Length: 370
Image (cartoon, rainbow, N blue to C red; front, side, top):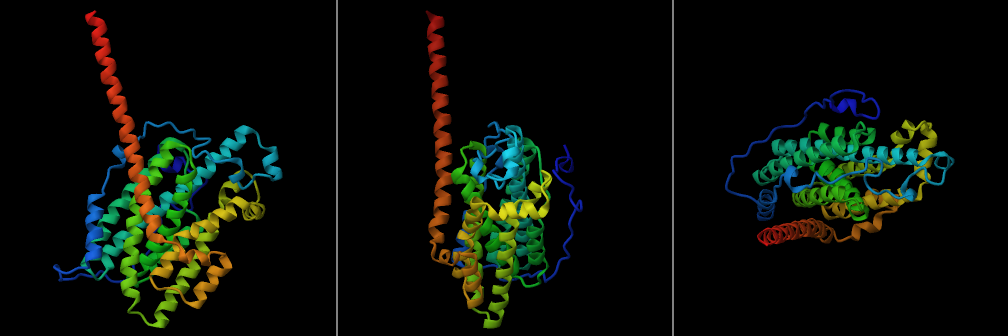
């Protein structure tokens, strides 16, 4: 079924064109590179995987409760609208929320794929081009997986959120070669990692847990790449140039915070936009969710050297400044370990099933001999 037949609301346009800016850069130095980036490139090659095979697509998903979302996590919970809803209505609301959330993941992954390809084109150093080429493949795989989950398991998609679209557009229109790193690797990918992690760690549904764990294993490398490349480059910039990038981060963080309301979902249920925004703002769960989403962005921004007074004040206003002291390397290593542990558990279960099948076949053969 074509995607446009599954959208919960009309999309403004069938395709979005962003004019390309900036220069494509070639380098004739083929024998030099930063050891850390080349090691990350090797890891990117070693860690490639097939989403058709690694993920168990036979697992069943209830479209009306795809993530096991508790009532308290719904923005309408405790309102007069919730009190009037039937159990069927609540199931449909869960379906729409999961569709909206994973649709934004899907659109973001396509944006990440395009940004990674842009980095291949515009980065001045060959080691960065090498790694970005592996990341482009990673992002294509993620878009494929999220698209399949939405089409086959939920049966519904949502258009790209305006704030996410705005940040993607700002990132791609900027002619400076480092901006796809900053907009995508640090802001969009950092926020996505936090969102993925919160769902991964709370869902009791095995298929979305697999998808998120394996995607996060890749994303940990992508953020590490952005940190390495930008930290090296930003040491060379003037104070004025750093302030320009800090302004971009501040505006991007406001956009990303504001995109996480899911107001479009409530409007689809007949709730006026102003009231839908109020419900989302008053939800204690969503307030905590929005705050925790910056757990990966703030320490990364600090690590790459963007930590001026204006940026710190913005993080104070958002209530997330203390996250700058988080151990980002520890979070990334935990992402790797969770994916590997999930693989080990799945392979052990499959091995037990094979052993049981062999045992049953032997017993059946003995019975026949008797």
